[in-house]
Image (cartoon, rainbow, N blue to C red; front, side, top):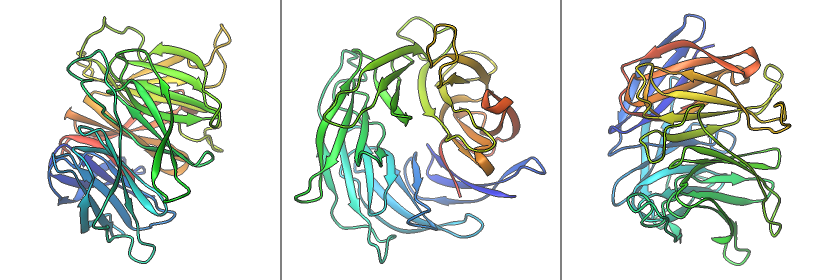
Length: 358
């Protein structure tokens, strides 16, 4: 089966790739110029088939609605204010688009019309976050770096790199706006970047110290409990350094890959073999009875890996991008998910930062 993949980037374009696992081919088939740094792209095929949204990382942040055809070719439908500076992460829900505005410390919310979901509203609600950390260059203020929806708890999780916290937001029953409901604190200077929830546990990637942290994750008002913290690589250099953790993913188990594993990326490795993707156990399988044990490091040959997204049948494949070199590459999960095997790459894509499998 041929797959189409949209690539967000640190250029002015969103590129469409066509990936054929049978012929082991990966090529650019179309592109659309949308504006400054469309670095994140999101979709919700269940509720909004044929549509995706991206943000322009500029001082007056913008959210763009795009539609795609059967070949993945894009067309712009409209744009709206992101309610902040530098929208770096977006999330498409059934009835709204949530935006993390990195530089302004705001979380925006744009209503999605059930009749014309591609038409964005004229006004954007927002929540202002606050907080600082000891890293004067990176933590002078609030810097939300991702928005994740926890369906069972009906809340948003917002890792804030500047405030060393993951904020928890819930909707007000009065007016439907998002409100702060709690937070999870992390070590000073850690810089929470991205999170993933699996089996009632919260896994948080600390960008500035290249650590992954596990907490229990009960519903509010019960508080999460710290479980474990470990380095994102086998031989981490002394802090501070330029090797920064980037992405964290736990694909849902399925009939082909029954055991869950955590995959995370590290940027700016000085090795000529490029950045690594680290694979961790999630279930208990280590000698000390603890989960979250490093079992494999995979060299990608890419420079400054930011995004990676699983896709294809049973999430067999993962696409990874090098924002500063190497283009994009597709790897296949092998050994039940305990390792990754290179399939094919494409160096024609520049500045790749995020992906959506169509």
